Image: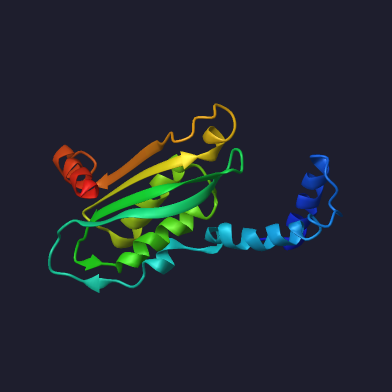
Length: 185
């Protein structure tokens, strides 16, 4: 649960810590703005993937379902700086599918938390596997991390790519390659 008063107090201390005056006109309302913003960017803390994936539809086939280029924004738990990019999800249904918007909503559950990309990739795959019980799941995340681009090594444009496979995708290189071909299309 987000505690607005603790956030406001922390932001005031941060402003003072960098040598600014928290009572300066331009900064006076900043603690309140940051607290309101955190409700949005950390909304995933109160969300559960099983709630999002509860509504399913019966299907007769078991063909691969792919949702690609799902844009996300998250916050690195190490530096509290943004990282952002695209998520590509594939699953092979076993009699049931979810609405395609639900896949993007599952991404939001995990992206809207203090996070690391490697963990987020696995969490998305695990949630889909546990809730949908499909034949297989594959998740690929490609992201730019501002902790690498605006500070530290300062290498803008560099991307980190992570992948998680479950079930039929785990040891099937042909199926994995089909996924990669389809997300390039």
